[in-house]
Image (cartoon, rainbow, N blue to C red; front, side):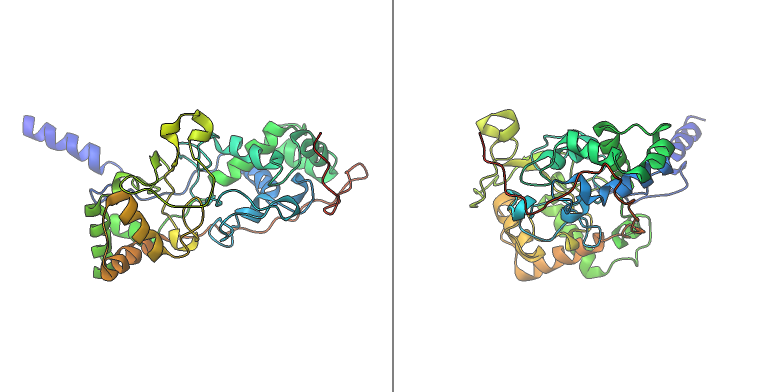
Length: 335
């Protein structure tokens, strides 16, 4: 009787969902359930809305391009008046559910993250007050706010909540590796499987694990050997003020990593091969052979999932009270 009960308990734990996954440090990633379609639609419009910026030209999609893996494929992004950003843009894909947002973790939620670039002088260079004024002045937005929130009031919290809800839907399920995890042993090749086994045995899954293969911890870049860079970003130290947090960054997710080049916070690794070589060296103390690197890269390429199918939104036109935009306006002198 006790054996029967134990068997039933195990069945309930591992088989109740009707799906058996391989016992691995990586989990399949699944689509999210959309509970408020109107909020998602509004968020999509605002994600592509350049009038949230001072210039009327830069949108969230400018640096987190959904046509290119949720990044801009630049070392560091281009901001207002062609300003060079200080750090590489992380992908927006699969960003929901991470321990925090930004490389240094200064935003705890997607909504908090969405608020940052709007007012950052090196990015969209507007203010929250001006962004609200602009969106509220566009008559065509009223019905979308009412559908999403129950009335047409516009404030910065609603703007960022809507953007965050849209970003929450940007998951990339059903990649070949997830198919393998779910039992389709033909989904990846022998060479790719050897790459995954090497990835595990090397210790990569200590940081890159779970459904996103990252995004759940902060780690020092340069555990075994210091990472040499000319980039001035100091990571978590910027937030904590503690010297021991210098060069500690949020572990990037590896989903769709073949699309999100260049790599690292400074964008200095132009290829996956280079990224694997550097990480093996400075984090693990391993000097991979050319074949070992090729195997790990082959595995990483199995993590490219189904990209979000986005219907480009048609944004409503300016209203009579919408402020005029002048991208070429001279910067105001600092007082």
